[in-house]
Amino acid sequence: MRFAVLVFALQIAGSAVVLLTVRTITENRLTASATDHATRLRALLLDGWASGGVDGVVRAADARLDRSDRPQSVVLVMRRDGRVLAGNVAAWPPNIVVGPPTTIAIFRVARAQPEAMRVIGTVLPDGTRLLTGHVIEGELAFVGAMEVAMVAAMIVALLLAGLAGWAAARLIAARLGRTAQTVAAVTAGDLDRRVALDGGNDAFEALGRSVNAMLDRIATLVGELKLATDGLAHDLRSPLTRLRATLERALAAADSEEGRVAVLRAMEEGDRLLGMLDTALRITRAEAGIGREAFQPVDLSALVADVADMFEPVAEDRGLAIVVAEGDTITVPANREMIGQAVANLVDNALKYGAGVIRLGVAEAGDAVTITVADNGPGIPPDRRADALRRFGRLDAARTKSGAGLGLSLVAAVAHLHGGTLELGDNAPGLAVRMTVARQVPLP
Image 1 (cartoon, rainbow, N blue to C red):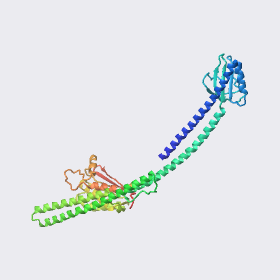
Image 2 (image 1 turned 60 degrees about the vertical axis):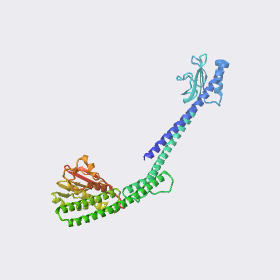
Image 3 (image 1 turned 45 degrees about the horizontal axis):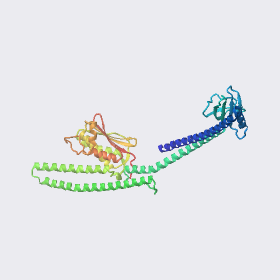
Image 4 (image 1 turned 120 degrees about the vertical axis):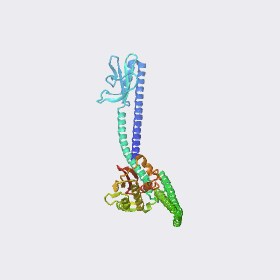
């Protein structure tokens, strides 16, 4: 629309400039021609003065007015006392000054209407005043008609310019719209989507080819990342699994209680390291968009209820309660395993750091669905919430609680994978964590 308005405005400016230019040129040419006629008529009458004085001027004026081929001539010869000696104007116009040419509208003798004319006033040596000029009424009427025609043509041109601007804007929007739709689809996780090309050689085709080349490179990198993360997970899990098996044998062979405690602690640290590795790989894969291929319709209300049931015994052991807000069935396209893991992380955090009643809820919010987990614990100060979302970020500096600082990072990555966000808010008292999931994430 802005492009169409720009084209329309440029057309208006161009038409106005053309109209004013033509009008100015025509008017200047007309005025110059009429001034030339008046000047030559003045020279003719001055020649009569040179040859015969006032009588010569009168004879020259009468001779000029008698010529049928000069119907537009204007002549007035007037004595100093106001007596008209010759001419076709009855009286000296009051607004005529001697010297420069002037355009006025006055009556000629035997004319019913005033006429526009270009005149020159002259004073002879004996005080006799001489008025010479040329009628331009017809020429001005022609200029007016031409202006009307040009204005009409400009209106038609503006209508055509508006139509052309609208058509051009639609064409550009359609050509760029394909690229924008492709980029949006890739952003939503469809890495196989490409811009449809027409085989032309314009800027739009060049943009489409560049975008397709970029998407091919991104797809290659994501594929390589997937292979690398899968290989890394496999390569690291194997030694960690063997380490655990070795520790289990060491536990069985330990003779003292201190030895068994040390081995158990080593096994716990190995399990913690394996969990950290698994979580870090999950975050990396989610941030790379890996996992959308498993999207399917998921009932979030039922999923949240299942997670609450799973953690309810743990909550009872810690003297806490889990309450799920009742609501309608809300189904969105999602990776059930990853969404379940994210909600479980939020509930686990609430059990570790919260207090009182842990409330879970699912609600629609426009084009998204919000999953909320709120508790009545100490919460997180606003200036520390960014640190809580940072990978390996922990607010417990003394590390008195178990964990690696990856739980919220994984939830944020899962939310991003599903076209949503993660927000930490105040539950007054306590912390309210809200994870949004887009309703329109396309299924693969």
